[in-house]
Amino acid sequence: MPTPQFILDLREHVGHDPLWLSGVTAVVLDDDRLLLNRRSDSGRWALLHGVLEPGEQPADAVAREVEEETGVRVRPERITSVVTLPPMVCANGDRAQYLNIAFRCRPLGGEARVNDDESLAVAWWPLDALPPLSANDTLLLEKALADTPSPWFALG
Image 1 (tube, rainbow, N blue to C red):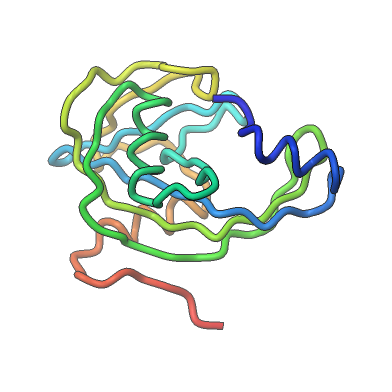
Image 2 (cartoon, rainbow, N blue to C red):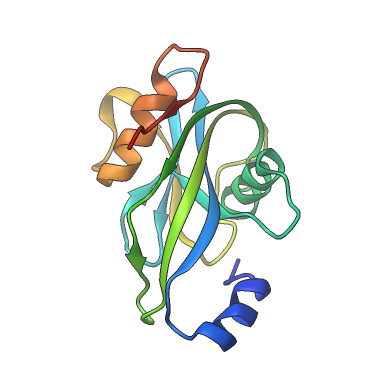
């Protein structure tokens, strides 16, 4: 899905200045396999990420994003981490920073496939043979795989 309209509308007023946004990450696990996409913006394999639409609940957003990007329907099982991600700069110069809520999700159905223009590839990866992931995704995955009932969060 392209940049949400509400962000485009904000950018008309703030230009490339930093935006504080709410994001979600899906860690989709099927036994010992992890669903990843190869991002079209960076070419890297990654967890599934998205932006909350105004008024949208985070769990609904994470399920929507996974299906939009991969064709896989999921059920969010639990929040695994809440963290402020480092500031980022998009290829067009837009600056943003995300408060990210990561969810551990289980697949309900659908075929893993490239389902929009955000992915070059979509695949299930064995947990013991993952491709290189960013430091942020490695941290979010580590927290999602931890067998703890409470979400992890950073303290100042």
